[in-house]
Structure formats: structure tokens, C-alpha cells
Length: 452
Ligand code: CA
Ligand code: CA
Image 1 (cartoon, protein in one colour):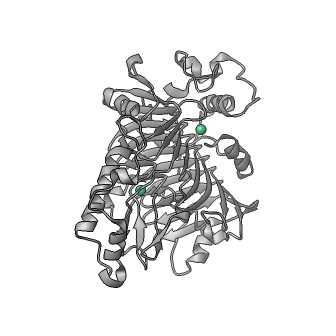
Image 2 (cartoon, helix red, strand yellow):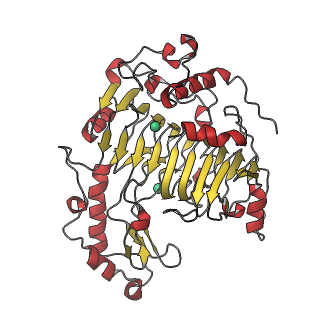
Image 3 (spheres, helix red, strand yellow):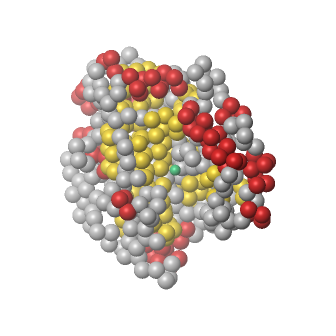
């Protein structure tokens, strides 16, 4: 297979220099100033690491995945000095995002930003959002399938749940406008208890932030989801809906310290208080997801929300590379429609983890996944056939995968697990926007050293 990636040495050398300086103590410094990305922009008083480079004005490198297509992704790299903001709480974050409007802006995150707070930055919880007419015990009594049946909840208690949910959403959902770079400063920048929403925006960079626990206090009961009904949540830690040119890089995502597997059981099902970690839906396009650490979560990365989203055809072009999926149960990612390039990622999974491994790559309706040199390190008897799962997909390309050090043919596994289905190995496209592929034997070391 020919991969016409060329001329990537310069940006990738810069990249390696930055990664080295930022993440690997004791790494040698770049040999000359010209090999540092800092040379391209004025030094900042708030560098990622004191004396090191400031990443906040970096744009996505040429050819670094799908977000490099069609003009590339610069985020707020060209922000005027008055549109560079340092924020330390929710109010400052929201104000900074609004103040510059559509103009290029850099928002630097310091410390932990809790999105579930009032205007005085005091924490808000379930009791603060709950509508006076909402009563959880009454809710589960009213909509018990044994008496209510399988029709969707309706009536005063469901209306009260929706109002409660809306109260929470008004606080915890923060909209990110176009032409924005959101950059964590140092090793401890967190955004917790809410969702960043990139809704029909273009040109956004999100880097070096720990996202945790986008907790929904008022999950919806869907009696028709699966055989017994399910609780479903509203919030992803980061959600792309109709968003284009987005680069999510060196971030960490998890449920924090409220894992769904320890949630209470109601209506016979364990409640779910979290939805995705990073979901990419509703005609989002040109997205690069690189060097992130996704961990301890159930439904991790949804690419395409429904088979019925016909407008997703030709969109949802996403590259995932050098990500670490660690103890994620499923959807790492699950893809519909998209031309998704998945290369040099590391999966760490265990069937007896708090989030036991279900499957990794979901091959969904009209998906065209091109997978190369991905690596699985698993415990507890994860079968080769569970590294993928067929969800009405009909094509899948895979090359160079390793499972516990053995070469594994994911397409053969997919076919073996679905003998009645026809799955072609030709996905009809060839990735051209990517960095040099690392051999699978290098991926575990490389990703562990750099992701997150
Ligand atoms: Ca980080
Ligand atoms: Ca979602």
C-alpha cells in the first residue's frame, strides 16, 4: 500500500521537540532555536513549562490528519494580544469566549475549572438544579415498565425532569465559538462537571486539558433502548455537532470519581450519568484527535449518532492517532458514515476492570474505517474478535494490528464473528493526511510516553 505522505519531517520534528520538552523529564533540548516552535511566535510569559515553549499559538501541522484538510486548523493562533485570555473559573471562561466573538482568540486554562458552579463560583449539585415538581422516587414508580409499559415517559413528572435537566444544562454546557484555541497551562489544567459544546463552529483547537465527570443528575429513561430499557445521559465532556476543522490534542478524558458502574440501579437498570467523552456527530467534519488519553468510561467516542443521519454521508472525516484508550468499555471509536483514519493508537483493556472491555472499534453503518498499526494490550481473555464489533458496517480496512504482541487480522476477526455478513476490505479511500506511521512495535512506548 502506497502512502503518499511526504514532507512531514519539519513539523513532526518540531512536534517531537515540544513533546520531549513538555513531557519527558531529562529529554535533551532541541539542538538549535530554529527547531523550536517558539521561534515562530513571540515568547509568552505563560509558557507550558517555565523556560519552555508556549503552545498556545501553535496551529495544526500541515498534513496532520483530517483537520489539516481544506485550509487546515489554526484555532486562535492569530489572536490579537487583547484576545489572549487567562481564565481560572467558569465565569472567566464564559466571558473570555464571548468577548472576542468570532475573532481569533486564545483562552488559557489555569487550574481546575468547575462548570457546575454559580456566579460566585460556589458548587451546584442535584438539589440546586432539581425542579420543585421533580421527585425521583415518584418518577421511577410512575414509569415502571411493569405498569407504565414500554412507551416513552410523558406527563408532569417527565416534564419536571426535563425542566431540572434544562436548569443543569444552562450552567454546565459551555459553547465554544469559531476561531478559538483552548489551551491548558501546565500539567494540571482541568475542566470538570460539564460539557464543552462545539455546535456548528469552525476552526477550534483544544489541547492539554483534563476533562472529567460531565455528570448528568437527571438522566432520561428510554424504555425502548435495548431489551429492558436504559438510562441515557445528556453530556459528553466535549461534544462536536456540525463542527469543522477541530484539533483535540494531548487531553485526558474520564468519568472522574463518579464511575457509572457504581451508580444505583433503578427500573431494573444501572443508571448512567455520563454519555460520551468526545463525541463527533451531526455532519462534523475535518477533525484530528491526537495524543489523548481516554480512560475509565463506557461509551467513549461516537462518530455519527444515528444510521438515519443521512446528511452525515461524505462528512465525519476524522483522524485518530497516538491516543491511549485505557479501560474504555466500548466505542473507541464507534463510527457511522465517516472516513476515519485510525493509526498508531494503543488500547489497554481488561475484562475484569471497573469498566470491563466490551469492544474497541465499532464498524457502523456506511463507515469507512482505515486502521493501521494499532496495538492492544489486554488481560482477562479479550478475544481477537472483540477488538472490533460490526454494527451494520460493510467495509473495513486493517493492517499491522498487534494484540498482546501477536499480529492480528481485525478484518478476519470481524468476518469470523459475523459469518452471515459481507464485509469488504476495500473502504474506497486512502489516507494521505497523516504523519509518518510508526511500526506497531513502537506504539506502546510512544503513546504511553506522550498521550494525555
Ligand atoms: Ca496533558
Ligand atoms: Ca453524546
